[in-house]
Image 1 (cartoon, rainbow, N blue to C red):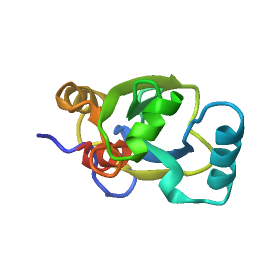
Image 2: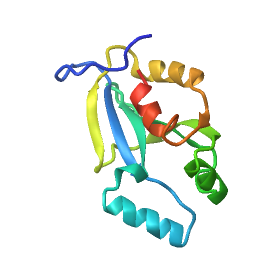
Image 3: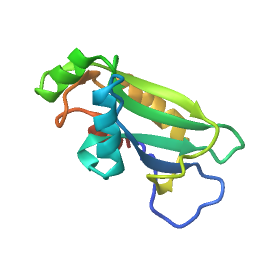
Image 4: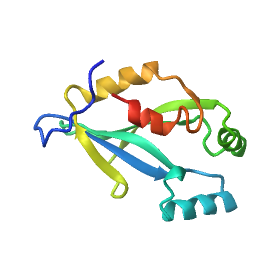
Length: 143
């Protein structure tokens, strides 16, 4: 399988690959307030990680991530926290620009980063288990 990025210095003509962290989503009310507070205090265990590809060509930035199909469902959250597998989804979304906070450049593509990520997504097992097969694993394993 081709590698998504290299750690070499700036390479012209290559896609930039980033890893970003965002707060976990929770249902409105006290759970959402608690999650927001935990994120503000930099509790890494309560963050969602994703891969961002910024193409060399002038097109939109793409986000690749793995999360529960219904991340705001309290029953899904409880099942996931107790170590049960929950249905997951691999998502690809467009961004207008890179996040300003908690977003790190990890390297430059050696090939077509978006094509490699798309092929990887086709093979990714979508049963999510916190700590065993979750967004961190997806972000670390994406070639």
